[in-house]
Every structure is written in structure tokens, then in C-alpha cells.
Length: 268
Image 1 (cartoon, rainbow, N blue to C red):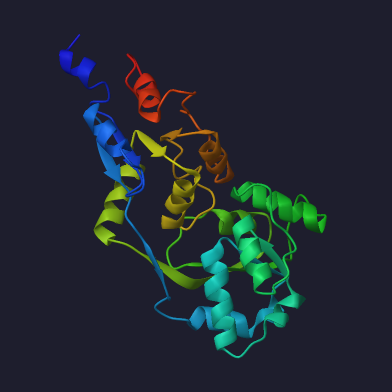
Image 2: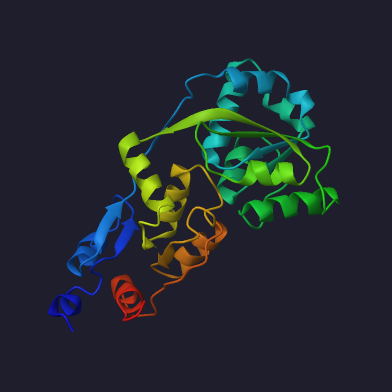
């Protein structure tokens, strides 16, 4: 066997990791021969225009459900609502869905009632939870849904809601800004099969990665990518975003060793 393959068992593999906070993970992966790529840092800012959001707020009476996918969506929406002179109590006439517990807590702290928090963040899970709540599991026909999101999103939820019969208005409430060249490069790599594995070192890194694409369902985006999680808690977080963990170390095996065992094994 080639001595290089023995000393660098991850040679030829491209592994995606968080840009910071991963300690020695990138260094160790590179030492084993992997090509290590980090996803871009992002900043959350106001949208270029509030026009669509303002129009939706002025016509809240036309919606049945207001769905907040994350804390950013809730925060920017509520701030704009109040800037326009509206009261939080005006949301009492709508059903409100928060897609995770952090968003629910933010909304309730802001005196917004929350009617539903789906157990699963995947688009299918959200649609099923809404159907169960209203008693129409097979169709959401006739429902008018407002979905404040980022300016650019790869979330399949709007399409899933429309496929179930709902009318969905997706309005820009904020922007996630990053190095466009880095994000474009990452998109090309993922879509072209250039990423062999994504390694999450903590539950927080899963959420940060999902925020880049403004989605709560990563299953389609990463369907051809091996998913590695540092521990059980991280795997639970990955599952909440629709991912199946392919690699998880068992104590006391470190994550890098588990990656070597899976990705560096002959014939894989």
C-alpha cells in the first residue's frame, strides 16, 4: 500500500467544517490528508427594502397563520411591526407557529402567543403538525400563510405548504450577508458533489450552518454528503434539521478517528 495513504488516510477527501470554534479539528483533519473547507461567516442585517414586509403587516387580517422559522425572522418582523406603529396584540387574531423552542421563547418574551411548535423541523414535519393542529391531515387548502424569511433562502417549506394546498406569502424580513464568492463556491461544491463530508463539532454549529441557507430542513441540501457529528447531542441537533448522522464517535474515540475509520477505509 502507498505509504502516503497510510500516513494520510483522508487524502482525496473534502470535509466541510465550521469557520471557528472547532479547536483542533481542521488541523487534525488536514494532518490526516483531508482537504478542509470552512463555510463562510454571516452577518444578519436589514433587508434592502421593507416594501413586501410592510405590505404584509398592513394586511395581517388576510392571513390565518404566521410562521417564524427562527429567532431572526421573529426579531426583525416584530421590530418592523412596532416601527410601523402597530401593536403586538394585533397578532392575537392569527395563529402563530414557531419552528423551534428558541423562537418560541423569543416570541413569548415579546408577548406574542404561540399556538404551535412542531416536533420536527423538516418541511414534511411542519406540514404534518399544521395538518394535525387544524384537523385536516391531508390538506391545508384555504389557509393563508405569512412566512417572513431571509432575502435568500433554500428552504423547501414554502413549496411543501403550497403542495398541501395553502397559499403562502414569503416576505423578506432580513438579509444574511457573507462573502458572496465564498458562498457561491460552497454552493457549487455541494451541488456538484465536491463535498464528501460535513463535520459538526457541536449542536450550535448545525444551527449556524442552517442559517447560511435560511432553512430548517437540511436533508435535501446535504442528501449526497456524509454527515459526521461529534457526539449524541450534536446528532440530535442534526436530526432536528432533517439530517441522518452517518458518523458519530463512541467514547473515547475522537471525531477525527471516527472519520478516518469511515472515510479512510479501503473501498469506501
